[in-house]
Amino acid sequence: MKHRDLAPAGFAVLVLLAVLLTLWQLTWGGRSFTSDSWRRLDLAAHPRALPRPALRDELGLAVDWQALCQRRWVLDFVYTRCTSVCQAQGVQAARMARMLDTLGVSVWSISLEPEVDDAQALERFKRNLQGPQSSSWKLAHTRDEHTLQPLLDSAGVVRVREPDGSLSHNAAWYVVEPGCQLSQALSAQEMLETAQQWSSHATPL
Image (cartoon, rainbow, N blue to C red; front, side):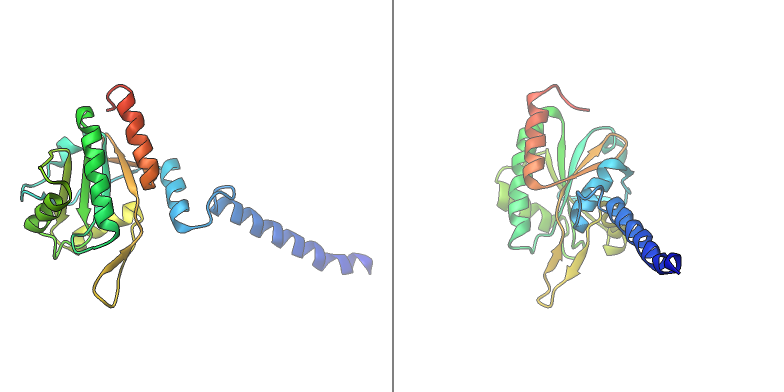
């Protein structure tokens, strides 16, 4: 009789342990309790090949993926109609590009709104934020949202169209290693610190 009474309690303990183990695994040992932090930890542990859709830069030129994938570079996502976060991120992109210019590391900002951000819009956005042109900070757009989506999926970027027409999206800075391997997703401060480390050492790949 006593054994029968203990059976449900023992089963409940096993279920609880299974749940805790699953939670521990899904949160990378308790280090991640948000989708963004989970994405960053997962990407660091499992770098992935970046999709290579057709892109055109702010000058209207086709992006040469073969040349781009031979070096390390930095990726982020913006859209030119944004009046808040993207403006600040653009300023940071220009700053980092100047810092990394001598290392041959470029910063690429890809539009989240390709149906609006043509080459002219991207060039104007860059000029307004930065002043003189820089070859190290590049902006680009895909042909349409359909060709953009694989890039967003690979980076874990989610866009939400708001009632006023603006876009809400999660933001990060991505390190892309040679071979176009997406290897890190960093906060703005982490990316700045990483750029400073690269600048203080020998030229990276």
